[in-house]
Amino acid sequence: MASGRYKRAPYCKTRIDLAFVIDSSRSISRNDFEKQIQFVNDIVDFLDVGSDETRVAAVSFSNHLFPQFGFNDYTTKTDVLGAINGIKHSMGDATRTYLALEHTHQTLFAPGNGERPDVVDVVVVLTDGATNPGSYDRLTGSQGKQKTQNEAAKIKERGAFIFAIGVGRGVDVNELNGISSDPDQRFTIQVSGFNELNSDEVKQMLLKRACVEIETTPAPTPAPTTTPKQKTEDCKELLADIFFVLDQSSSIKTEANFNKTLHFVTGVIDYLQVSPSETQVGALKFSDKPEMQFHLTDYTDKQEAASAVSRIKWKGGNTYLDKALRMLRTEGLNKAYGSRDDVPQIAVIITDGVSTNPYETKKELAKLHSLNYLLFAIGVGPYRDPAELARIANDPDNVFEVESPNGLQAIRESLVTRIVPRV
Image: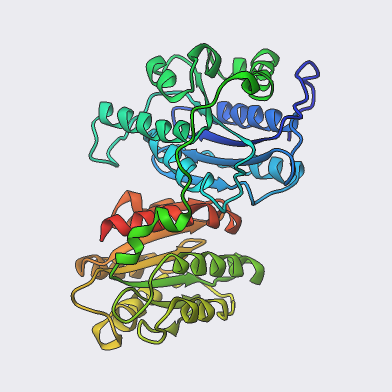
């Protein structure tokens, strides 16, 4: 929780939509990451947080993207601070800043996700180093940095302000200035380390600039607004067979949490054109054993398919993912049950924990990968296994991780936009 001891910092009553973009790479020590989270906590603690006041969202990044929560997820300061305290230190071996910035403009600021057109948008990027794609993208270091600049430009083009805060000696000043809004001397902040980041002076500086001075700084002219449907117009041309594989094990804890998974799936289906000649969808759930919910040919429009998803019930049990993958291969994405030879075969696998039988899971994954299925892995909650998620997905960009079921809605559009280009 925020310490409450920074009495000299101004209490900010300006309404803003504030998104934090937080570096969680392994170059940051555990203690320093805690200081970074404390900084974010203290900044939020000086805001009037509420659905009609300031709204807050967050995403973290390292080798992967880690959506945390969106503007609609929490409406009280207490809940926002609790969510910030729950952000995990991923300690990834790369710094793919561009993924988090892409998520910010494609998802956090997407219409319908809580951003308000009549309120100033502010993004605070925190990092201790330069963009580094590592081995996860076919990008050189300079290409990765350019992609970060491109994604930041898209945020600024929509009229948002970006503060870039670089911590320590490993930052690239030119990259920070490219990320931040103009003028650089106002929107780029450099500190020597995480102790200085947590100082009264730096917190006062950011609060003053974000809450007071920003009102006198002309914002860039926003690009014409688009709806999520317009942004995923290509879905109308998508021809694919898509299966949703849903974990219903006991570690999900409540039916309400499971229903959040179902709500996420129905939201994804809403982007698709479902019909026998366009996209077909199916679903199965699993715990101790897999259970087919409906095949690809059972429903011929999105309303019927979404309604069928919403009727799925939670049971609990273990996490026999291997059995679910076997059913996916033999009864789901299978010609005998309606799959088509001439369209991509796609599976979206949502799980909250480690497979009960990892050896058999690896065997089933090998069979699916040999069939050239496109597999997307979504890990939910504190018991998810990043290593297993990476084994499930065909590509590192096909992996999504969220801290709780509440974070699923924040990745919905990102998932859809990842599916479409790959087909």
